[in-house]
Length: 466
Image 1 (tube, rainbow, N blue to C red):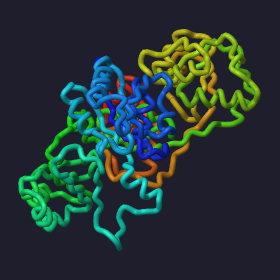
Image 2 (image 1 turned 45 degrees about the vertical axis):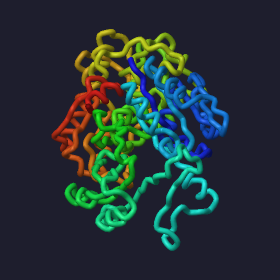
Image 3 (image 1 turned 135 degrees about the horizontal axis):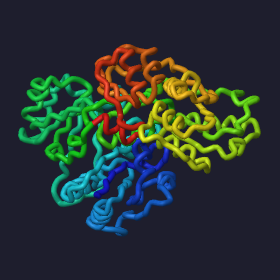
Image 4 (image 1 turned 60 degrees about the vertical axis):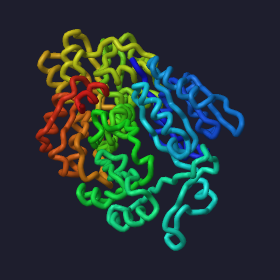
């Protein structure tokens, strides 16, 4: 299987200026090929397991040639590795990122460009110098002091806020450029609504009008506007805005997987989990055949409650452990315990049916008012189980809700109720749900387009979105 290459802008030096997306992909890199100008703080973020390749260049001293750099990243990606090409500043501002993108495309590999904070604006800002100021200038040009050849430099013109003034802008450009100079208008750049309209300088205004371009839009004029080093257009979720409603800190893996497929992801935690302190007071955990967990939060809550009261998991004795799905299983394993049972279908009903089949005394660590289907199944089979509510889910009062979403992901019934408590504007969105109970709650909330993930796992949720 082929890997993937990320062209990542590391910013001008300060590690705090590395973008969130840059840090995200850097954290899962198998190989990192980095430049001389990448800050030490950013280099410290490279995973210990990653292969490091120093491709640093200084005047008159090149560790690797440009062709060698391209070969190194392509060869490793062809072997199935995740390669991060880490470049100072922004990859496409005098960083030769365009050449590297062309090489990747020729090799038939998947890639992504992660823009970085360019030193052209960041360094002056840190020195107290604004790149633009309404009272003093109307534009800024960025040039390199190095000349790559003997031809006169040809500057790219980039204009912000130009959609409403395209006719005058076209007249200005025609005084400086040939009429057939490539031109591109980019509307709603980097979002799920991005549109790229390509034309020439002589057709700029006509293309803006005929395509009904509205702000925000960026206009690029120059030879580079004729390039099409696309990496987003063929991704399956490129035009989708997706909201994840999981509690804060629980949806990062899922968000990363969706962004890899081109989606614009917005994290809106609609519930906040709260540990129910004192819920273990006077509770004897010994004498049970099974201990069951219905969520990652339940696992973490139990261990927190044990620690704060000076107790530990040994109180469960020889009880076997059941987990509702892979994520919950992994949370248990992270505490040094083995999981004895995970249902084939990752929901409360099938977990309860499996435990009922094993028999014995069952102790469940759950959320307050959570997974009622478990109690129904236990009652159906005459199983007497003890439920300990170790946390509760409170609805979050959202301060901001986006105007629309193509897909909303719900991982529990409480996340549906949490969104419904804040807004009723998403009834036409596709609701992707974990389990039948969550889907039923989405129906009650007014959703008419519902898709159920085949399993309660991030991979299955992603499949349901595509």
